[in-house]
Length: 480
Ligand SMILES: *Cc1c(COP(=O)(O)O)cnc(C)c1O
Image (cartoon, rainbow, N blue to C red; front, side):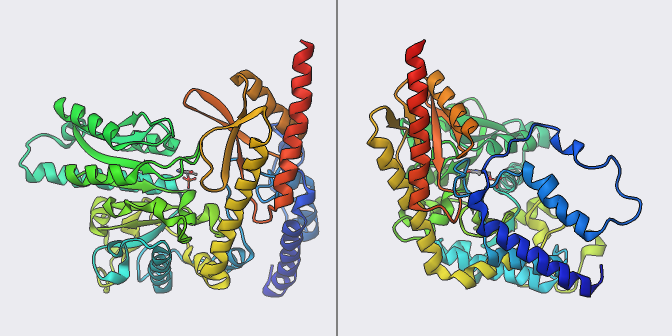
């Protein structure tokens, strides 16, 4: 493909993408295919000589689309949203064209410098304490990780190194492995599975602490766990607090947990993967209170801030603690401006290579402006409340937990088994797509506002589908 062909095919592809997103509400949100469907549709070997563009292009609808779950359909209400917008898609095209690998400042200065500045912009939008921002001239700063899972792992590994250094300074003659075997980290029983996994990867004991009846981790629970572990000779090093848990969008009590971590000298990491985007609105910013006690904070603009996957923004108060944990310095990566003013982001995360991801953040922040992004968040929260009112008006149903942002958790006032059948019937019907969750011994259904196109009518439509299916499910029940 030469540049002229690229121009032509590029226009066709942009048209296809624009049409796809413009007309996405006509597609069924969840596909009908069975596992293994695709193997039957394409050859067993890559073509020996080149295929024609037109043949490939036709295969998008024939091979790919039948097996796509349409996350941007306004009838998709599963998991949490994943973000999408035209400005971010355009920026990703530019990023692909520049195609640099920005591991050091010298490997592509714009790639590093734009990331530093956009993370400061975004940090200011969230009113993060200034010691998280690079522009305040301290050791703080932000970085784009691929996912929240990586951010948690990086924070935990950094805490591990910090405490190993501390043990060395205290003149421990124990081997690293022996010291590490005494380390313990904490998460709530509602934290994301990736937090538990980071403990497995880092080989650190990860204790799941019980939450209160609002699914929130409370200070006294943490304090009791720390006290009892210290009495056993263990060394508490890390707490991951969640703002906006994945099962039910609950908020750990940061104002209680924070001071405890500060007093105990424990690394506090805050995972706000979904909820973080909402903190750009002044009315939701109080949910972030207590972040000033944390060492690291992370959320995913790729969930709810119109920036396509992957873009998980992480801020740290002391970046030397992260770069210390990950610093190896081979000669071929050294450069003459090393360590001056601008970070070498390769020391801030696990892979060496990194894409020019700040471009899409920059495009989105500039082309929407703070005002429109705030309005977009508010619209989704409003829709969740509209849906909540529909649930509450139906006596057969009850809510699970509170509606704070764009998620409504609800269940039939029946046993789990009936709720499980309701979930299956809703998804089998195919008009909308949702997923269930489980907490506090209860199974419930989750309605998340996901697509940027979801409107008030779509929320009403989802409820109409659910209540129709409930009617027939409960009628069948009576026939048993
Ligand atoms: C979605 C989610 C994650 C995982 O996000 P990735 O970026 O896919 O790793 C982690 N924590 C919470 C609270 C989430 O909602």
